[in-house]
Image (cartoon, rainbow, N blue to C red; front, side, top):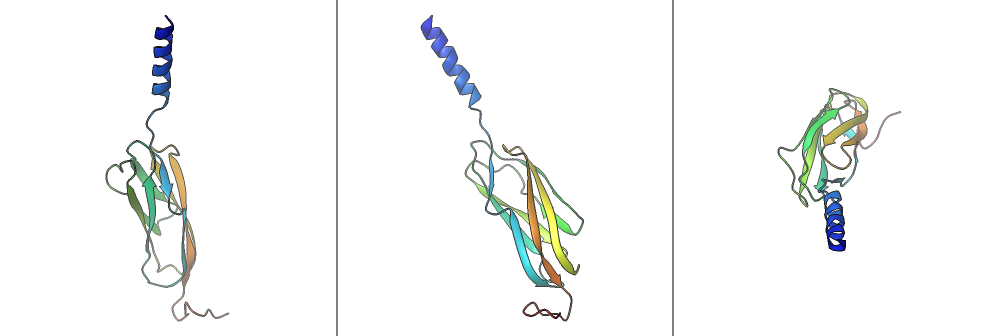
Amino acid sequence: MKKLVLIALIALVSFSAQAQAKISFKTDTIDYGEIAKGSDGVRVFEFTNTGNAPLIISDVKSSCGCTVPKKPDGPIAPGESSTIQVKYDTNRVGPIRKTVTVYSNADEPIKALKIKGEVLDEGKSVLEKTE
């Protein structure tokens, strides 16, 4: 009888340690710095699945239409890395303060990423700003 109880306890502990995907970003903020109007607005958030189950990113949404995120296709295996591409419309002059929200099957199913910086008007140098 004691063996049966011990086997049942071991089985219960095994089932409670389920496989789980975990998303670990290299950074959760990208700083564009000061960039010229019309310059390249593409940046990438790098991440790794540090869990023990495949990671599936179901959706990536931006806080506005000026930022277009692109999620990876297909699942990311445990230990593998991938990227989420973000393209900001650099024809919009002024400060950049946007959020990109990632939805996945990870232990933290909703993750907010930030982009920041400033797009300078034509004629203004990224080296020296006029006051």
